[in-house]
Length: 338
Image 1 (cartoon, rainbow, N blue to C red):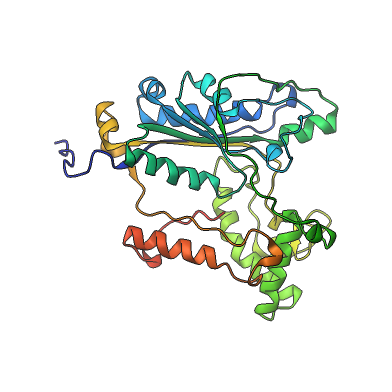
Image 2 (tube, rainbow, N blue to C red):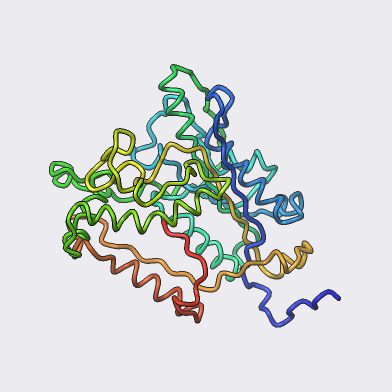
């Protein structure tokens, strides 16, 4: 017997009704998808996941495109050697057969996928929108290989429809910081890590072992994930041992403890209201509720941080999201840590 729907839920309650991932690997750059193509492929899988892809695509009235890496550091958006989509949200929407009224190209930041999920959920509650997709994709591996192999790519797409570009935002560093070796992640995060090493009174070798012990379970998960670009199983000892392959990138991080940006990956989620989900006959077995969320920023400039071994904003976010959900950390079964 089919369970009766919960009639006590407010109609404006936001629910996630579809999610999709896409990865491209082992293809020649000449036949690989551009960034917006990868994002759209993930978006299509999210639509398919709803069980009503055509109806949901037609109902999408908001689409947020997560800002791609090549547009995240230049001021303004300088020309890409292979061209680019001048209107990222509609480059994705057009591939999906969607015509959103609200189209946003996100600002810079690795936190923005969750940030825009939060924002779209709030807008759904307020009745400003009914159906939203948050989607992103990168083709950095293709670009790297194309440059290396001397292959010319044509990623240029023109679309004159209006969209909201949230921009690159404030500068993440100052000329003074750049002069002293700060300004890009490969320099800044090792500073934080060495502050943690000092706080914990670790030698370099003991800290390598501690980091490897922390990261090895993540590697174990990646080794079983078909969407992992670097899923080769590695022991904690392998992660901690510096070799010609696992060389130091920036002390104290060997290669396999770094975030690997050479990937072709995309992901998407679709949110709507309980009322709209019922209107489109999206079964409640597809609904995922956002139980708690939060947003806070550290001091933007590294030189103005309180210290380099703690994250007050991260702690505040965690406590607030758990409080909103009425849950404790011990009750969490899964963690997705950026």
